[in-house]
Image (cartoon, rainbow over all chains, first blue to last red; front, side, top):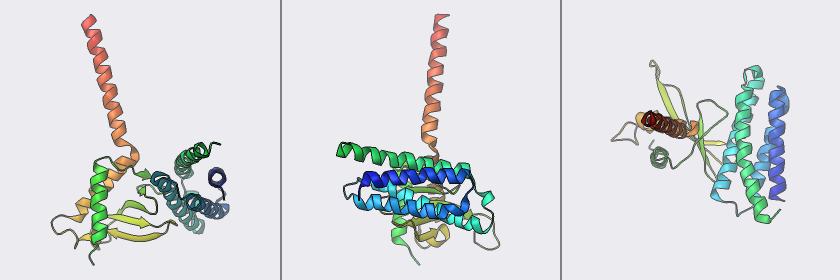
Length: 112
Length: 131
């Protein structure tokens, strides 16, 4: 597996999740969160040379995505309209910015 | 049940957050703040107290594992035995308040405002000198 490819997959999934939030496509989201968590965990496991800071960035994202998944799953059983799309997407955007720094550092390291 | 390791974690988080050595982040849940480490993450939050017959707030510290699962959580009520010479409520409230300030970038904002005020004050003094 390739860290750059896996990070790019994670970033792509984050973009899709933001789009689905905006479209209020809540039933489609739990699978996307799961796929994103798996991609993030793969990124961590691929490269044993990631710095503590890089590992912490990914770990933080994993927790946020899992909690977001639980929140949406619970809302699906009650009223998804109460979910705050702007807040969810702000949080995803911050995670994307942080993950992007990991991706850039890795690309620089391997000279891509 | 005593929680000596959790107490140590809370104390260190509180001290290092107060010294601006740790940067917390906002989460998907308003009022929940998180700091991540390579294999775990810690969240602080608050809720209406579970002490029956009273109103007030409980402060919580929660630990999440590599997969993002909640593995441990304590409230200030759980920490009473561990804080013999201080009150866990105030310790955990202070940690929560400082984590919130860190996540919201309060120190940076205050520093920036202060700098702007000082610069505008200097300009006013300069123009006053020229008149």
